[in-house]
Length: 60
Image (cartoon, rainbow, N blue to C red; front, side):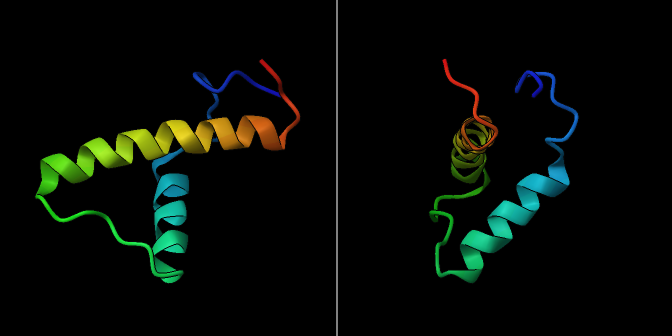
């Protein structure tokens, strides 16, 4: 189990795949321009890193 802040497995491809899965299931990024979407995707990145940590059994 590696540190989520230095984990080389978290790549732009992983983030794009998570976004694609969400969109496939009907979830959409909010309208409001690139700035709004960038803010939302930054929060999603943190959430996915937390999810991966939980999945691997890490606890805080």
